Amino acid sequence: MSKKNIEWAKWIPISILAIALIIIYKTVDNLSGITSAIGRLLGVLSPFLIGILIVYFLYVPFHALEKRFARSRRRFLSKRSRGISIVIVYIVLIAAIYLLITFAVPILISSLIDMASSLPTFRDTILEYFNSLPADSVFRYFNINTVLTEVFNDLASQTLNPARIAQFSRSIITVAVSLFNVIISLAVSLYVLMYLKQIAAYCKRLSNALFKKDKTRLRVERTFAQINKVLFTFIASKGIDSIINVIAVTSILLLFKVKYAFLLGFLAGMLNFIPYLGSLIAVILICLITLLTGGIPKMLEVLIPLFIFQQLDGNFIEPKIMGNTLKINPLLVILSVVVGGAYFGIVGMFLAVPIAAIVKQVIGV
Image 1 (cartoon, rainbow, N blue to C red):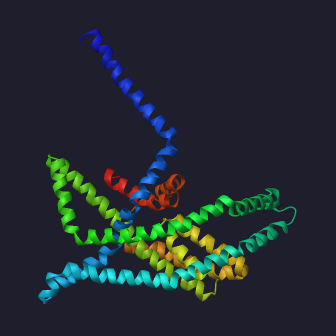
Image 2: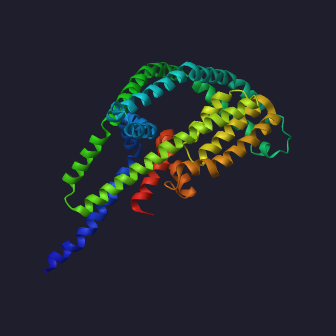
Image 3: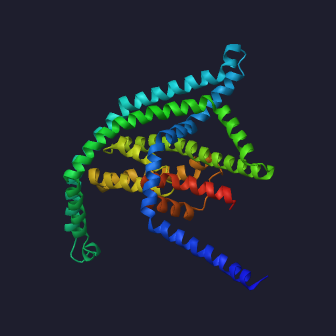
């Protein structure tokens, strides 16, 4: 090999490393722009993504009904098992949505408005408590009352800011767009359920066309099967467990006559989608609201059954529903949730764990 070729051979890996470092630097440097672009893309695709999410929720009852009708001795039912199952599932879904809009949503909105109007009272109660502490209290040392006063004043100024009011006005228009997106999402989910076999067959043909080697094709198909299993397990299992959380927590709060019981129960169910941290945040919020509205004795009364239920749910109910598919190290779960929340907000916190589980399944660790 000539000296010139040796020089080129030495500089090629150095050049590749330099280019890779530049790409990494520019990516990190423009991270806000990248996350913003991803956010816009997810916003555009949200009706389709929500439609697929609905499919994951509906597949279990749909598949059970389809199998039952397919085994029926009546030829009319067995030949039309898929169509009949889809009709039944969507009638139940639309009825559930109607009941939620008619009964649950007005209660939640009323509780939310009542809680918002009580925020000044909550603020005064908290500040009065910290101001009444002894001079040698550790909270006095850290000047907590001053910090809280500044935080509350900042929140109040943002709430009364004309820009915030304008933003609220625009959000009312967004509701109409959201309703339109819900209709599209339902249509997408209906189409996917109706043509599920055809979609699977098309994906199979696409895989055969893209990957000529049998080994590569089998590896890709196995990877996508694992991803589908993780998503299905997380969405369906967490959905069922969150419904159990809404019913159980709301019942406990109603039993002890806690104010905003329906709103806090609904919030506990939504936060349940965030493993580990979600339940902890829900309990802290419930205890704080109960303390402000009912005092320390009421808070302690509620905390005990809530703690018992959370232990039952975390150690028995959720593992029984979810199985072993999403066995992830708790530290990795917390890290995923924190990073996802830091870059993509609430949506990132919800998606962090299934993404981490998918990565774990794909790389096989």
